[in-house]
Length: 539
Image (cartoon, rainbow, N blue to C red; front, side, top):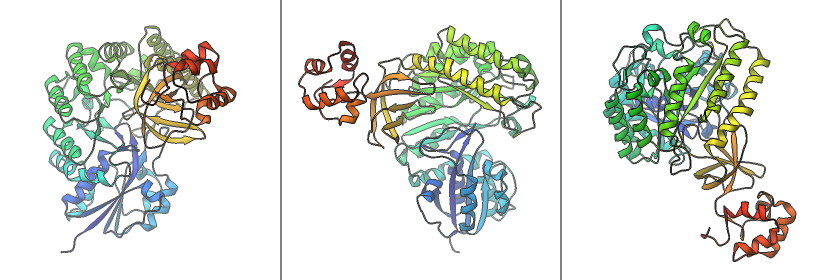
């Protein structure tokens, strides 16, 4: 019997439950590859970036496309496949053609033989094993089997082995399924949580590590604090031992980066003792810069009631305080160990003009208390599960978002990375004119702009000097004043073109006092002294 060839096209997904835009590779695309292998096929993986760079579309018996972003973000090096790209790709696909992800809701998807809304891996497997291609979710045995089989596909990703980050899922569904959960979220519709055991998650992590993966994110779950819990209360009582087994096991595997995903603030507030123990475990086992995204959605109690949301503002405040207390110390890469993030959604039922004021008041309270929040995600609700009665006032939404960025985010950045902080291993990704932008690896890494050109694809330690609303500015720590080009020297704080020309004419310098005389400004000189290197390797 001839071998079946399956082409898996990764158009990237960006969903609340999965990150798949580079440097991430999603668990969904790996499960699709694993399901095809389980059915006896050979698999070729192509990302949309491979295709953008001219990769040929190979012959295949089955072609599978996963793509779509339900929570669009601002991307740096890449972005999910556009509908225009999907339309152009379609005629080149051979054999059966299946599509999944939010792109399956597009008009172009109707051209495919099979449009899958639930679980593309499960539907693919059924079709390849002689069953009807229908909508269903995978069972636990299939889930674990496919993640092991599909782990090898990471080697075909363009970011392999560095800076690729593999996301690993721990469970499906929501503990609040009985009440219907939050009105905007589809996760409760998947039923009670289907938990992967710590042993199964660790088996996948081990297989990924053996395939060269150094960076992982434990994502996909609605609440990592609730991992392993079988309690049917709302909110559920945490299972500390399950979390301990999982994260101690992950720590012992020796990854360079371990970050996590969502947390329900109501769980943290309702079960402070168990939650504190879990937060300590996560802080101990994960790498700094870690962010727990808290599903607040709104500080308006009427909106909370009408949409059956997770938490009250008081619960969120409890969670933010606890995470700051346990995870706020600075780690070895320059970032705090563990910080909260907040999600705010506009357009939910019950929203009024007063909702925006209440949200702003809550954020201001965090600022006044001296608390830190790593990122505040503000978006409009998407009618994925239902239509909402509120029409978002675009001017009000825009004004609120701008106010938060200017008055809250900017101040939070100054707290998270004060002037003089050295962020280690910032991976440089793009040039924008003479500015080089880079990020540390992780869930919600700070965007760092360096006002001169550095080599892309390399990591640098960056000394932080300034803050914007969503990004920060810094300079290479150990800036080599004797060898950097004049354009780089001119970009230094307080230097400019005239002083840079003078510095270049007078160098090399053997000690800082010589440089200080050329600069002829004590304040500028002392500022630069903190990160300039006179002799290479000597700071």
